[in-house]
Image (cartoon, rainbow, N blue to C red; front, side, top):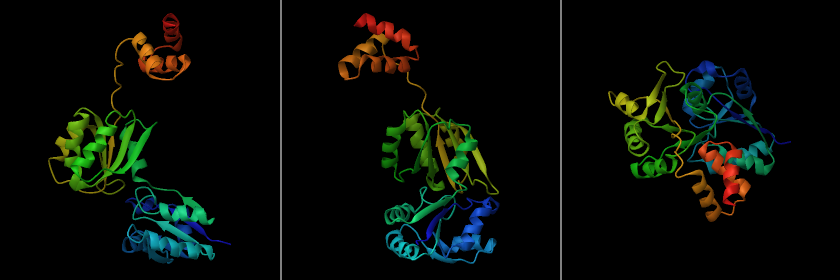
Length: 274
């Protein structure tokens, strides 16, 4: 029988966030595939875990995946860990997981810390809907293009950002999304110097401009303010009827939502038009 690939979350800072199950699994597997073996060895030594360790990162992901699949199909179990947090979330690993699925190898998650989820939980921003986008483009042009696409999003945008790019990033957000847009920045989560900034983008730019920014960052951009509908209910009904193939029922529902009105009220208006 094939072995099992365990996708194991590890602490994002505080070593006490390691779960009992994660420690046990890492002790029991034949091999641990780690993003940076030197970094991971410190964690393993802290918990007395002596399992064999092999590197698995973005530069050797393709070749290493085939080697690990061979071991798994030969009955060995393997744990996949990243430098911090949950593997495959803006970290290497999805290719290995995909290959395991294709080869019929079992994949089991050992959940735990995730920087983006931790930041969202303490941000005070809406979390009923959010969009995680990994790292923003490093260059100004690409970053501005991305911000133009999401500036009207009605959900929280979550991303990672490098400390040396934070001020440039905030400057671009002010330019495209406005200085008053709500924002939260979590820095050094679970570590000694943990910090959460919560306020507007403009206030964040002023605050972080006062000194050198250090540490791991999660940036959370709050939802855009609701746009005021243009024209009247009748205008909207006529426009959708002319420009779309929607049924009147669908049009009424869409217009009622856009104007924040009861469907029955919009329905009466549509009857007069028809």
